[in-house]
Amino acid sequence: MPVKIDIIILSFAKNEQLRSLTEQTIQTAIDSEDPVKIEFNILVIESNNEAKPYAFANTQTIYPRSKFGYNKYMNIGINATRSDYICLCNNDLIFHPGWATAILEAMKADTELLSASPYCTNYHKNEGFDENGPPLEGYAGLLGGWCIFVKRSIFDIIGLLDEKLIFWYCDADYCKTLQKFKVKNCLIPAAKVTHLGSESLKTVDQAEYQKLTQVPRAYYSYKWVHHSYLKYLAQTTLLRLKAFTAKSYKTN
Image (cartoon, rainbow, N blue to C red; front, side):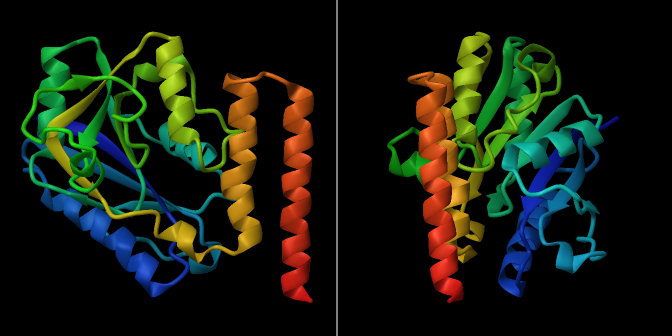
């Protein structure tokens, strides 16, 4: 029997370029492993409701009714799947042959390893990490939020992802949460997954950019750094005012 792995991909196919990006992520995942040994259950969570009822080939594609939130949509995917292994993914990835096998072997060799990050041939290579090295334990700097591979049992320890974080700082919050609960994470150099970059974010306007990036920054700071609710409230109010002003100016 093949090992079953749920792959959850967040997509924002608002144009043909972004749709093709998601399709490339799906296809490289399918081509990366022997289906006799590893069976991928690919779930695409599509943010562009105008594309409904379009379904990506070889996947289950769903269109949430709720507003976008990176962690919120990932939680929808986690709750909609059942395999013992889950991979949380952006839609701008290239999976290289044997990536999942390498992570499964590392987790089999170390039963305490519940979370793993594959090696990005862009980011990790540029940061000087040895692509031929052994698994490297750590959190921030090692873990890439664009592709996180976990055992489902991890959520029995850390709970589901914090839905107050809608885009930026989701990976930083995840790292802090793993450290809080003393859950082991490793970078697996033998597992190669290339992250092409935040292509979807480049297509949003300034108001949406502020919402996706700066508002999460304020919440993360409140949660993990200064813990001042009044400061957090003041920061988010100011950021939302700036975003509203920018949107109004553009409209007029």
